[in-house]
Image 1 (cartoon, helix red, strand yellow):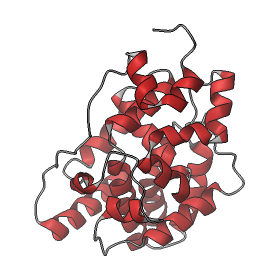
Image 2: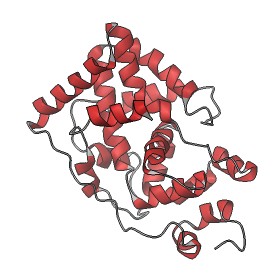
Image 3: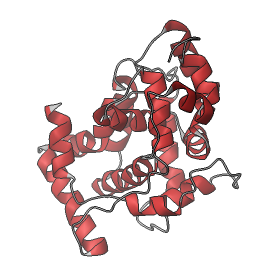
Length: 242
């Protein structure tokens, strides 16, 4: 918790949430990869394809389960990022933040709430990192409709085993800072300062943007959850629960 608090404090003022206003919160059909383009806007500092290549190569050979808080995939990501450049590490974090922010929606949070048997604001940070760790195809499916996670084998297995840790990947939030620290031999403060400097250079301001989370609703109202996320509710809400 201390580590997460330091991360949030250091990164205050660095946010891509303004791009959320362009994201529909329905499951409307879009062209392949359009969801990622909407999430990152017209950023020229990062390469979306390269970002996903790094993420998916790190996850290769893993089964997608994140009961280890994402430690396995995070370790693989740190290794790959540390082999690039300081600029590449910072660009990775920029795009990670934008994609992470784009998942900050009530319907995605509701999916996390069902899968995790509850989900605090801190846990929702980890869940969104876990969705990114699944790779581009699943990330885009979740943006289009979080209920689509009902098709993921890890989610289905978690429901069968009553495992509330699936897809919560805390360690993935810190891969860029750890890679930066490895390359520089310094501490993570240097990483966060470098990120804040990039943000200042890009937009010249230091203020958070209020995200458009879509329509709020009661996660503890089972009827509402079944209406909005019918397939996940079928997996995780037991008959007769209210």
